[in-house]
Image 1 (cartoon, rainbow, N blue to C red):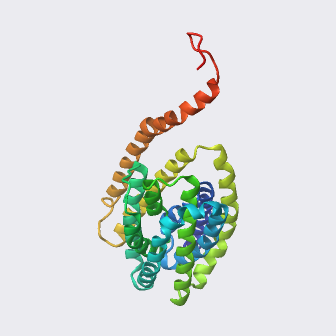
Image 2 (cartoon, rainbow, N blue to C red; image 1 turned 45 degrees about the horizontal axis):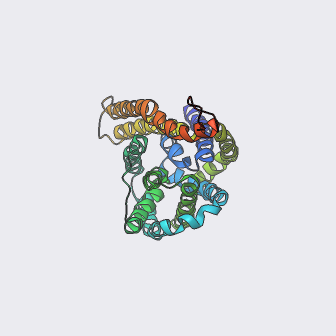
Image 3 (cartoon, rainbow, N blue to C red; image 1 turned 45 degrees about the vertical axis):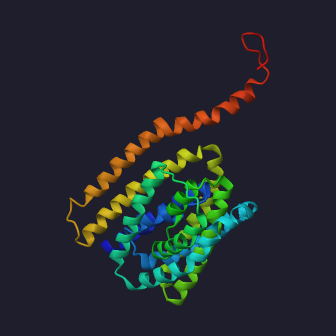
Length: 310
């Protein structure tokens, strides 16, 4: 009875988080795995979860790429070195996924995600001049990370924001890279025999959530401020990843409870501080930079106090 209850809880949580993640992906163009994985890993191992998510992401990423296809020529030359580097990273990562203890895979996933999300939340940017030099090694690391965790949105978002890609170029670049990594990873998983009945069951369970969440997110984001929405999603990620990291430290007997939850508490405190900075400094500053053109357009040919045309 308890096992059945746990199974029902896992399925309900999986349905809820995949719907939310699909909604966010429909709104922002990325975020499905980075939101789904931290929560789903509480109930499933990477070895069972990853193949199902990779199959879902093949279709999601093809959709994102299709709707942003007009911007592909503008970003192709900037990202092809990353595409070249993907394959060796995916091959090594997939092999380790099939070989290593699931608990250590979870630990690596959470430990890598948390600082990346916090860096993104802090808005740290240091533009890199020699993009082509870092492209191949970045792609190899990205392929490794994706094949082990199915997560690549945070590092890609950090890089693309850092390099100043505009909205449609940002989405087209994400679409190109993520179509390549998800398709290659699915092929390698197949040859390693990672597609099991359990993975297929997860895949069929979450398909309805994805089909409903993506178009709904794409519709709703037209009425919301994308930057504020993205920042709130990152906060959710920080809290969940902090909890997951604390739990896996206990499971691996690296830190005892309740001390392991200190990491979660630290992550939450940092995120609350970054949220405060965002809503009191960064967001108002962004709105001010957008305001002058609107003001000048609305003021038109109004005379100033001296009677001159503005």
